[in-house]
Image (cartoon, rainbow, N blue to C red; front, side, top):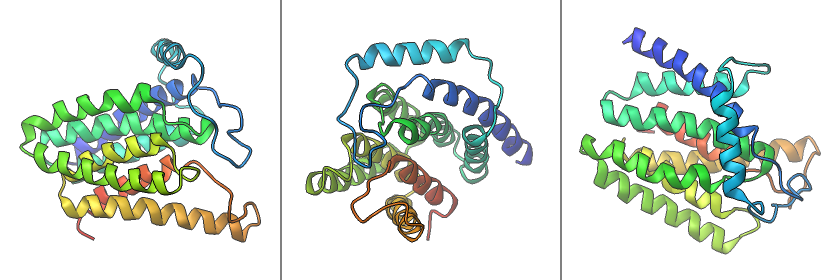
Length: 232
């Protein structure tokens, strides 16, 4: 098992380099760093995504300073290999590690979670989870968590984006394959981590009560908490 975890970490390191290269192809939109959520997708989102993936395909998969994306992907892949023992569920989580690393970096830089990554991830995850026998609870959890975030977006659209809602459905699929309790942990952990970050910003006087920040990385971190501690 230790060899599997080590191999997953090495593959995660390489995949993280590709994820960073993909993320570099997505540019921040106007207003992305002005303390308010920017106004949506660029004029040509498909062209932007194609250019980003083409550039990443030509990139050499070598980790580069500060190694954050590569290191996070390696640790997440190792965690998945350690905690998940069903081969198909593990494959779904390993795919999500790569996609999630790219999404977290893109959201951090651009305040966007592009449809070019989130939408194709639905059929990919459904296809990987189908042979596992965990598809129905995964779909139920994905719908439930996506619905919760849809309500939160409707209640406060300036605090969350539709990209966060789409990401919540993906996280629900993954966590639901581990069990209903893991889905609850993933949803709650993302909110708690985001709230803690907001408190730190307030204490450091780097933000006010109305300051917004990209929430996708905290949602993804919450999914990893559920992976590590699915039965909290």
